[in-house]
Image (cartoon, rainbow, N blue to C red):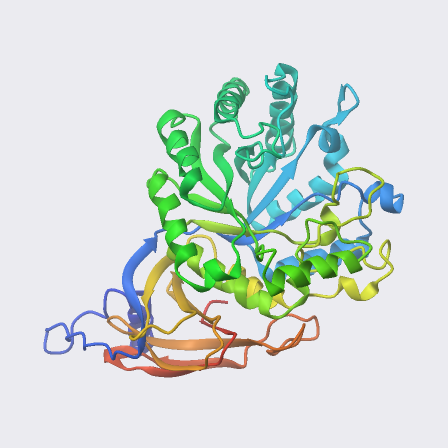
Length: 505
C-alpha cells in the first residue's frame, strides 16, 4: 500500500518532482536528449474549460419532417455519440424567430422540444454552455423590445427551467463581419452589450451568466482591436473573451496560426478566459483542396456553398487536431468545433431550403430527409476531436511541450493533468515519418496508460481501432510508461498521424 501511495503522489506531482530521495537531496534533472519531445513544467492554462462542439439549431426539423423535434432514435444516437466525446464545453446559438417569438407574441416554450432537450442533457452531464444570440434586432439602432425579450428568454432558461449549465452568453455572432447584424460596427455592438448587460442586471442574471465577447471572426492581426477595445471599454460587462478562426492548411502547418493566436491571447484580459468559439478549416479557394471542396459542393444537391466537404476525408481529423493543439498551446481556455451535425443548419434559415451547411461529424437526418442513410455514420474527424474533448476535461491544467531539435515540421504536442491523471496528445501533420523520444521534466511513472493511434489514409480511410459503435478504441490499455529519472520512451509517429496517451478514465 505504501508503494502504491508513493506512486500516486509521484504521478500527481510529476511536474514538480517526486520529492527527495533517501539521501535527502533532490535528484538532478538530466539534460534532455536533442531528439526528445519533453513535457515541461510550464503551465499554459491553470483551469481549462474544455473542448466540445457547436450544437443546437435543428430549427427546420418541423418543416422537413412534420415533427416538432427529432425522433427518439435520433436523440438516443446523438446522446450516445456526444457522451463518448464527453465534452466539457458546448456552444449554442438562438434567435427570436426560431426560439422565443411566435410572430409578435413572446413564447419561450417553443424551444422546449429541441433546445430544452439539449440543455437538459448538458445540465445532467455538467457541461458548460456558451449560449448566444445570432444577431440583434433594430438595424443601425437597437430594438428595446428585443433586448427585453432576449433577456427574458435567458431568464426563462436559467431561472425558470433551471439550466444553470449556461455560464456564458454572447450577443451577436461575429459582429466584425459585413454579414453580421451589426455590419462590422464596433460602436453599435458596444451599445448592444451595454444595454443587454443593464437589462440582465435588472433581471438578476449577471451573477449567474457572464457575457463573453467580442466573438469576432479573425484571419489576421487586424481584429485584435476588437479584443483590446472590449478589454478596455467593457470591463464591467464582458468577463470572458472569444474569437472564431477558420485557418487554411498553410497557416496551420507552419507557425503562422500559432503566432496569430498568441497575439489575440495577449490582447485579451489575461485574468479572464479566452475561448476559440468556432474552429474549422477553410482551405484556400485556389488550392487543390479548395478546388476539390468547390467541386464536391457543386456535385452534392444538399450542400450549401458554406460547406466543408473535407469532413468526409481522414486528413481533416489530422488538420483539426493540429489546429486544436495550437489553440491550447496559445493559452486559450477552450475550443468549440464548428460543428456537430449537418442537420442543424441550412444555408438561409428558411423552412424551404434543403441546402445544408455540411461541417458536421454526421448528418442525423440522412435517412429521414436526405435519401442517404450512410450520411448518418460517424465521419473520420470524430476520432481525433472526440479524444481531445474526452481527455482534456474541465479543470485540467495545460502544460507546454518542447519539441525535438532540429525542428520536425508539422510536429506538435500538448499535455494536460487533472486529479493526478495525465493526457499527452501529439500530432504529425507533415508527410514525413518521425522517430523521437518522449520525456517528462522531473519525470513520473505513468501507470494505466491507454494509447490511441490514428493515421490518415486515402479518402475516408484511416488506420485506427474503433469499437462496434465507431468510437475510438486504444491500441494498448493498462500500460506502464516509466519516464522517471530522465528515462525516455521511443515514439514512432508516421506521417499524417495522431497519438494520444492517457490514464484518465
